[in-house]
Length: 261
Image (tube, one colour):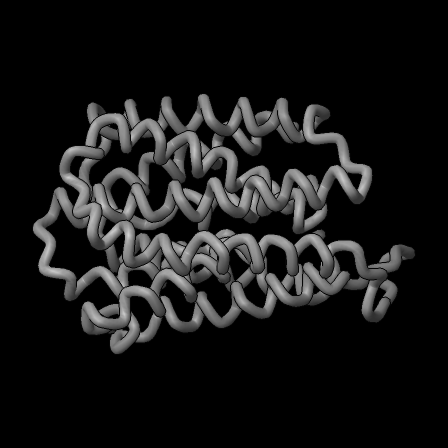
């Protein structure tokens, strides 16, 4: 069942991402969180996200504005490592509180509560019209790297935050997408290296069941993107934004309550 769920969600998420520009990780994270603790779910989502972006980079890297990538990367890389380190530390905490229902005990760890609260905040922001049009001046791009990297490492959510600092960079459509992809790869590489080191220290096996689900998710994501180019009509960004926000809100509540993670 876990293989089926991950495959279906990854394929659908990749198809939506192709047209909407929203992050694959935003939709895929909750699916992994159904089967793994939050730190492992964020890391597994990050692997699929990285491989999907490497695929895109192979097609678009010539269009990237490397000056903007550098301004983001200088701060994004260390910030992503810090966020990933913090996630691993929070995931190693005991349940902060417990409650019982239907003969079972539930309760969030530090990681579940932190990621759940942030998902709730991001879900509310996605529905705000002022947030959807928010754009920072180019001089704040290093700050954008800091914010994008840290929250990318801690929660895996980075696309919406990155766009705020790229919208006024003076980039056309293709350079905007390509530059965002290259920044995302830098963040993913930084956070995944930290996840790997932290999980090894915690005694988690990176080559176990997680690896199989990551492989399934990656292949399904590629298939979803391929199918979308041939069979799906372009969906409205408003509809996708509402869907993503609702999903983040529900999963955020579940993580805060300790039902997931």
